[in-house]
Length: 139
Ligand SMILES: [Zn+2]
Ligand SMILES: [Zn+2]
Ligand SMILES: [Zn+2]
Image (cartoon, rainbow, N blue to C red; front, side, top):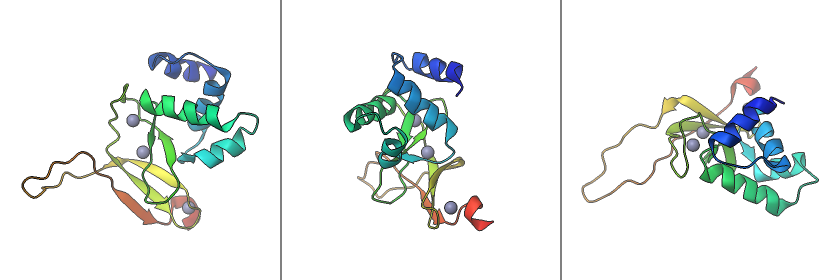
């Protein structure tokens, strides 16, 4: 675990260092796919669900992680690229959901395109979800 990197991120987002926050953030840093609440629970069996839920919530609110919208019923979260701040996310990239391993990854390079909406419609958010088979499963 890169404890310095973990500490830096928590400090940057004004979050006090707690054992659970450190553990959860380290898990996010090590993972290259989005993480669901269930996965996190399994990984951290000794921590109660409410604490984990609050930890995810505080990470999302302060701009450390974002919801990786992938069109499934499961809410997954992924690490933000770094420009996100308190209550202001800049994660305008697509998410790829693999039908084989059911993992979701951020496609940081694929930007959600701007669309022209009919008159009178106001956009609040847009999500781009790509379904398919991921690099690992294709091998
Ligand atoms: Zn973000
Ligand atoms: Zn896959
Ligand atoms: Zn993402």
